[in-house]
Each structure stands twice: as structure tokens, then as C-alpha cells.
Length: 126
Image (cartoon, rainbow, N blue to C red; front, side, top):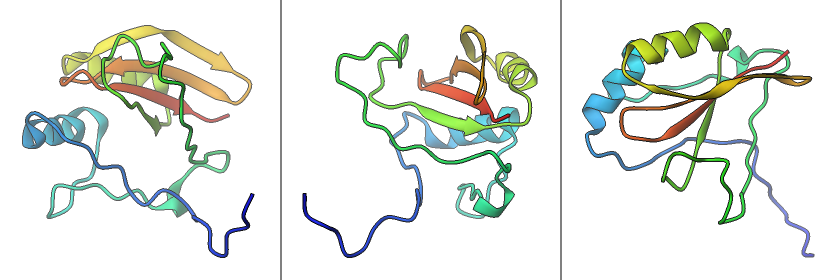
């Protein structure tokens, strides 16, 4: 394997197409507390990440069922302080809760489908 001279330092953004980007952006603002800037974007400062938090990049096999029941080709994982409360908030906003809350050694997880069918994974690190 070739040795690289420069390597990636982190995720600089997540960008995706939406059927109604304004409506979806406002939904994330209202139910997940996204602080939107003048461009309707949210910036997460790495300095505000919890001590045990980190960002993962992972390519899944094409036949994975981990993203189901979503038909989308990707899933976003969001760090939160309280998975159970966040799931209640998004459900009030019309999200579909997927599965049960899972408590693992490395954190608590929960999942939902947003209004456009994107599966979102919530993670509260321990």
C-alpha cells in the first residue's frame, strides 16, 4: 500500500439532496435543536464534542440491512445528551422510531426515520 503524504483530519461536512430542503432543515431545527446560520446550515464545533465522542467514517457492504427500513444509501449518526428524550422530541415532530434503544459499552443508541425517510442514528457516548 502506498504511504500518503497528507491525510484527512476529520469530517468537514455532510451534504445531501432533499425533496424539500427548506422544510427538512426547519424540521431538524425545531425537533433536534440544530442552530442554523444565515445559509441554513449548522456547524458543529469539535471542541463542544463530549469527552468520549468521536466521528466515525465507515463504508458498509451494499447488501447491509443496517440502514433499513430506509431505502436511502446512507445514514447519519448524531451525538446527543439524551437518546430517549431526543426520540420523544422527533416522534412529536412526526418521525418514525425504528427499533428499541440499545445500551452498549461504548454508548446508548436509538434510531428514527426523518420526514424524508433518512434513517438517523442517535448516540450518547458513555
